[in-house]
Image (cartoon, rainbow, N blue to C red; front, side, top):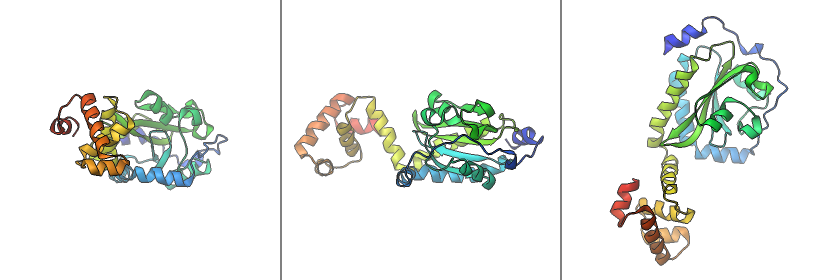
Length: 255
């Protein structure tokens, strides 16, 4: 991997002072409290991302920035060269900025959201002038077919993009393999996605998740604010929809 990176980047060592002040703007769409709330929900993936980038930063011998956006395309964290981060923030690109197609037009994150695959956007292909001299690569991060966010890598477009593709794919793969072991929120999202396959209602999913978590009928009733008899009725409906007859079968199917 290191040889690939170096072979593509020996030609130039431009720094970010070559980037112009852009007239495009990425409005920050979230209030600070909401940004903090979303970041708290994604704490495990953000911590893992920081760790993985620290382990791989020697493979990117040019100014760069990695960014993580949640499933709505909202940037929750970015990591990279100080000069690069200063440039982004001077152009209103910061925590809480939406990179979705409706808010920011064509960019690597929005295209990755649309295609649910790796995307590359270079220079003037960006809708927003802030990225006019950047090359950006982005890939979804998926856990068992559920997209939990988007990982982007940006750098000056004078550098070849080819090196960045295997790099970001490798980083995403590392996160996808390690995240379920660390994040109970992700585990819950994955199980809820499985419940969706059987058309469980929101209330049924809530009760089914408690049942999977080995909560008792009274505990689930108290948590949901309903009677134990109502919980038992829901469990029968859940068994019917998921085509099982007893708790052992239910646990085996979804654990």
